Image (cartoon, rainbow, N blue to C red; front, side, top):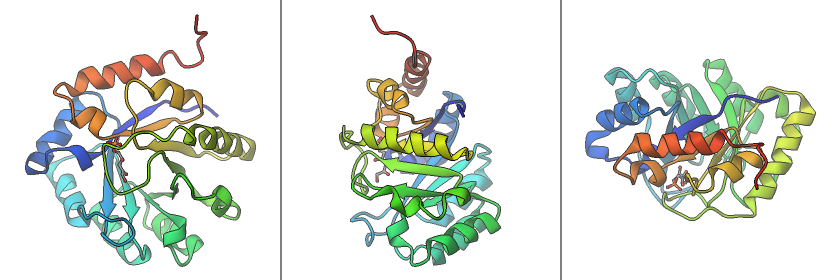
Length: 228
Ligand SMILES: O=C(CO)[C@H](O)[C@H](O)COP(=O)(O)O
């Protein structure tokens, strides 16, 4: 099942002092989704922002979907805060949840889409009994915790395996990739099966967001075409 490609800039690399304007700017430049990296200095060795910032962005007038990636442990007690803040998609790391099925149900019962996140070395078997309950699978292509890292090439094979798993299942599931995504490698990543692309430093680290997003879309338009 092929879906339109979605570009999701990670605000982790935005200028926090001007966050509302930064998000406006990146959406005006053609981004589809706002990616929101929540780090707790426990599950990952870094600390970012919580549901209050998500709520503030919604109040500021951001209408694009907010895709919340929880890098926190425990998981459940923060889900309600993000639902209340208006998060549209909430994903979490299965090994950080005491009850994966319960966490997924909590998210979905609050009206948001739910997904699982896999670090480069986290096995996909966590999907075995919940594939019918996930709307999104997020494959990390760096170890989580920091922006600006280099894409780990072995995750391309994991993307191919996950794409096959999704296609064989017949379920309607987005396949998102996060970490080291740029205009230089986005085509290869899409060819491996991703249909949603998180990019932080590759977008917010450049002066012209529209030029980068246009370049990414141009690369994506070549997916599946023959190379000379
Ligand atoms: O989840 C993350 C890190 O844990 C970031 O979203 C991710 O690394 C994106 O940043 P960049 O595009 O700069 O690699």
